[in-house]
Image 1 (cartoon, protein in one colour):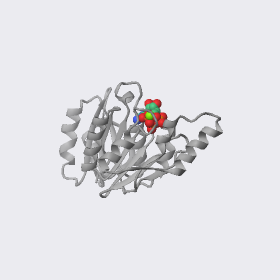
Image 2 (cartoon, rainbow, N blue to C red):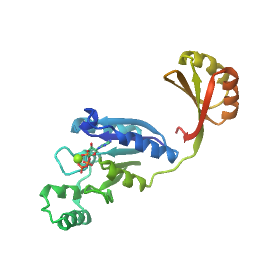
Image 3 (cartoon, helix red, strand yellow):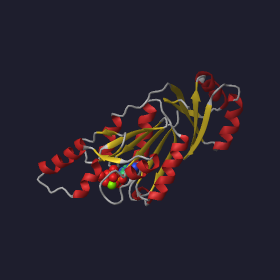
Image 4 (cartoon, rainbow, N blue to C red):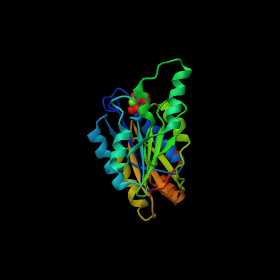
Length: 246
Ligand code: ATP
Ligand code: MG
């Protein structure tokens, strides 16, 4: 199963806003044993968004898209997705009612444009947004699942928690810290002795004064024994689980 994330918003590309959704969603998916195959960020640009979503649809089974669901002129994720899937819009009366009620309760005049958020592509399921006005949307198309989620983190997070996403088996992961050796030397030492271990995923990450060696797979006890025998300067090991590659 292939999953990917598209975060939208020009502020993310201009450096005004840190893309915290990327980190939050990847972490939450990992807890369910799911791993993204790709993350893409596009600005508030219909053309770029259309390309990014069309590409995602061509290669992934589940596509999560955040941002651009609001009522302003720079919010058009709904439009682009509906156009790509060939869906018309209808007005969802229950969303329209909630929006009207929200403004009435606050004693505020509701700008007409707000009701654009009640325009729902045909066949989409509305995902309730208790913390904001723009509901999320879930669509299925040719065996693919598409989630449209709001941009504001306080709206996205509770909605994301409730999504009915699959769960998958997870794998063990160990990260070794190795002191005072450049990463290429660490690799030269470690890679040959792990070669015959089946389905072992290996990764290296150079940090200040240390290198992290990451191993993911089934035969980690044996891999750890060999790494320790080969490298005298292993000074810590972290154990976690990660999702299985699909
Ligand atoms: P709104 O109804 O507020 O317009 P929206 O669904 O249209 O919601 P955006 O307009 O894209 O969402 O973003 C709203 C707010 O959420 C902005 O302040 C934006 O900076 C923030 N935001 C959007 N995407 C991200 C992200 N990936 N990481 C962190 N903050 C984000
Ligand atoms: Mg917006």
